[in-house]
Length: 254
Image (cartoon, rainbow, N blue to C red; front, side):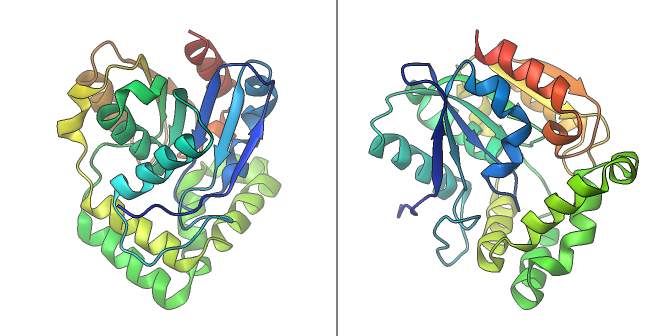
């Protein structure tokens, strides 16, 4: 496995418990801005852009979830972080499930937001990858943002919806497309029983990308996991920021 150089940011008090944050397909670490004030009060945060996103390296695809998770593990090694709690949304959650099942000694507490262990049909992801390689991420901006936020939220807060659309449009085409191929090939269901970290699974009530039943399936397969439902669509940490922040701080603080 060849690791990619990741863009990352450290914040929060030195000596506080480590917390690694990884975001959704088509986003940068900025997607976690709504949670920063609360989380930096309790944790030493390590925010990252996953491979192919933001200012991180963009290797040629296709990628696998193991590749994306392996980058995170290599970053923990580089920073000499033995173990950290982990919060990932969507693609970040997929990488978190891989880490928690394949390197359980490195993950303290685990929060999985608006994610899935298996997300067919694969040909839909392959087609999206082909479109983005041919026409860029801006070509799918409207359809993706419509899945990230409910119509009510987009009408109420067009500035935030526009900010998210810009983040997506700036995502490198190869990084986005190769990550789509990782999701196409993913089936983490056999790994879930190996997760031993205390786990919280958060789902968005109106999430069309990873509907609540996907989160419920993860929670049912991970021993002792707890499921929680919040308002909003796929980027529930933005649309329902107060609810998600409250759940995360309570769970990750133990």
